[in-house]
Amino acid sequence: MPVGGDVCSIPPICYFSDMLPAYVLQPASPSEARSAVVELQSALDLESFWKACLKLIGSTLPHRSCSLFFNIVDFQPTDARHHVLQPRKADYVPATSLTVSGPFLARHPQIRMYTYSEIASEDPDAARRRLMQEPDPEWNEFIHLAFWHDSAPEAVLSIHRPPDFSEVTEEERAFLEQLYPMIEAGLRRLRLVEGEQARRQVYEHFLRYMPLSVLFVDGDNQLLFATAGAEKQCARWNRGLKVPAATDFELPGNVGRLFNQPALASSQADSTGKPGMVQLSHPALRGLSARIERSWHFPGLQLRPCYVVTFLDTPASGDQPTEPSQAALQILQQLTPSERRVAQLVGRGLRNEEIADHLCRSRRTVEFQLNSIYRKLGISSRTQLVRALT
Image (cartoon, rainbow, N blue to C red):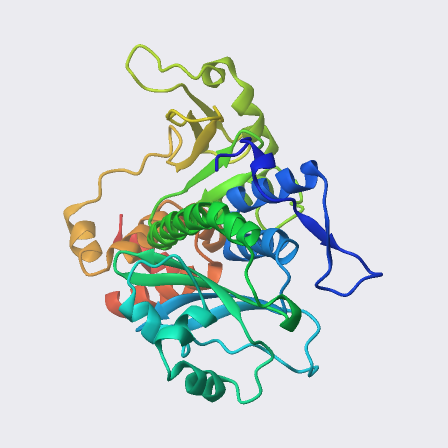
């Protein structure tokens, strides 16, 4: 049922009274019913989804316990969520198993709702499997809602009935038939969200250590993603401003304020078909600048901006290195690309801490690479390296 639909068509939602046994229910207000439906239909993670299911089912159908089985392999769940009311034994936990209903599901593919009584009526071995699963079961009847993905069960919602409420009434069946498509849609939504999250984690892991200094920020200046290089350049930017950061990562204030610039304020692309862009040079560190671009917009319910911040670290005018001599080129060819960059910065007169800031590396890494350069070139000092490159 869509959000905002006719909630009154659902049997009244109920709450438990502290003055009554747990299985005695009283109707809740229409607003509580509507709230429970909206929570179920908007849940984006398994825990929220399970709590919303309990709010609807646990307060509507008398039950002893309620379970959600998922990650089902060969008709057996590998994971589950359980909720138990008034167990006879304090340490009772329902079995994470479909031993009783597995053969029934195999014989009835795509079945949506069934009870233990229906299983037992066609399968004389069901009672034995029930005792094998739980030698001292706390239930005499259950209702199962089975949700399928292709030809295999994806999840099963199990509601164990209390002794005095074993028979499933027509009103309860009508409620479960209306509830079924909401849970089915929720499971499909969770599948899509989990797939997107898995893809995002793969992309972020790959991009995290790319040789780029790029970060993404939303319209509220909240960080969405940053490469390792961007985090180091942010820290370098703040150190250059002599501004103590409140956290390990903090977007420089003078960069964040650029998001309100007119060039970025419009959601429309410019005449070249690209979104707006502004650039800011660091007021103290020569060669360091930040370029801010507004991301492309896609159709959706909300039009929220996203900004791409790229840190650029290039030699300032007058600091451009001279073309290396033939002899220097031969020396540099003996080094790895990373070592060449360190050697060239040494040749420009930068100290180790400046090289570390420039390359977004730790000072210890720079010192390690310098020692490697000395060994490869057969020299022992910074002065000898500078002479070799001139």
